[in-house]
Length: 208
Length: 340
Image (tube, rainbow over all chains, first blue to last red; front, side):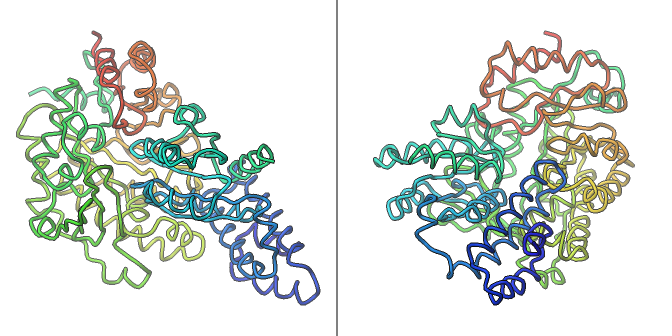
């Protein structure tokens, strides 16, 4: 379980040699990924228990991503699409993307096919990407009270363009609460990256 | 001349009524003044006028000079680029802002791209007369105590100087560099604060949101945020009283916050003010979201609980007032504080 331990402690330097060694010994990419996911799950719990904070969680997520980059060519693309295709981004004028990146990394670790549009994303870019990628779920974040209402604009943009039906909207970021998410017409609210994985998985079950 | 009641309250002294000072910054002030957010940033006269307008409109007890860089120099203004739907403003410090013609301004680029850039970072002249123009205008209006504003070094380093995610990674992988960044930020904050005091602010509102236990561990707060906050407070308190704010659940660092030497602590809406108020004057903490979603009756109820704490209280919002907060709710806060 060395790989899991490195993910938990954010061993960015150690993860690649360990994965290389595992593959040489005949472990499958799926098996190694499962071990990393176990590590990230524990990181999520440490964050919930306030034993880990944003820097520690970021380090683990980046370690996981380094490992995932090595494994990606060996993993089946169909499997990720089966779990769900997702686009995420922070609304226009919102440049807070740490939480967003954590959500993207946690979702990717959980097997979703993820497209992270980053920060300061205008509604029209969300729409263009949705047309291009036909995502199952759209995750939109806003950190500030000044940008929270932009999320409503994104959802309304999808409605007007006829792209709302058949996909879910999940919102997150410090500006939100369950009530506000509901009020602006989102399908769900996720308060952190660990919760986001549960919420996205639940929505995909409903879709099936 | 007697002091403004709010200055008495933050020092824990008796006041006739509870002073009210909602955290009204650019989003709400520009909205109710009917000016564009970019004008608020670019024009010192409009920034000062919007803050004074908000104070008059609501009748609260402070004028908040909250802009971190205060006013712009002529050179910074000349460098503003019009890019169609937005402006680009580059501060002398190197930090670049995107100012949409419709929407909220935000940082587009940090002053430093990588570690090597730190050696060439130069702290601008914060005493430049044009930077202090908004404070001067607010003081000339003689409408109440003017509070300066410092975003503390830990937060300043991780927002104005360096990409936040890279800063947090540096905290774990290259702590010496993270500390150097905070040291550089400290120099900026010290000079900015001293300049604001020289320009005549009556008190200082210091904030350190990135050092919140919702983001970093209490140990990190103690080692990389608090020492610099303490140094600043000790410097500023030679001349003016200081309020210190950290966002989020600060239960795990509340003793440390008290030990910074601040006169008064501003608390987030998730905190219980009563036990803290037994030890130090407090400032807060009506939930900003409720200023949008609730009506005056609920706002009065929430405000009254704070007012009932008694001496050494400033009634405020737990964080920045949202742009679409209902004006009648803020008026109700003011009425409750003033016993109307």
